[in-house]
Length: 157
Ligand SMILES: [Ca+2]
Ligand SMILES: [Ca+2]
Image (tube, rainbow, N blue to C red; front, side):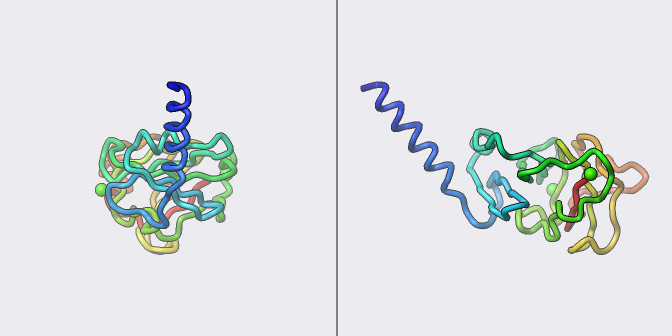
């Protein structure tokens, strides 16, 4: 009986994980797959982490606050490639789709390097390529200035 109850709890957890929403809301932890456009949001960071499928690459984490607090995941069915080729199909033209328009304060690149623009659709000024973990967008681009809460679009390579 204990085993059955445990099985039911696991099944319910899986169902709850599948109940994603179409768009992100503040305070949610979302996974946006840029290939499918599908976004799934969770109430906690732990639920987001537990949701990752083996077939999906985590490309970059984008956080609303410094030090990676309140993160969203950008995922894909393919990884970025090692060469710099500015993969024009690995993009988010409008960061509002994951509630990150003008509010990214830290990020963690995984398989990718990231370039931000301060306008929608890669318009305006672009940032240097982000290679490393950035805990504070106020200063991680050095002489390129303060990028805290500045990006409106991005590309990954
Ligand atoms: Ca590449
Ligand atoms: Ca912010």
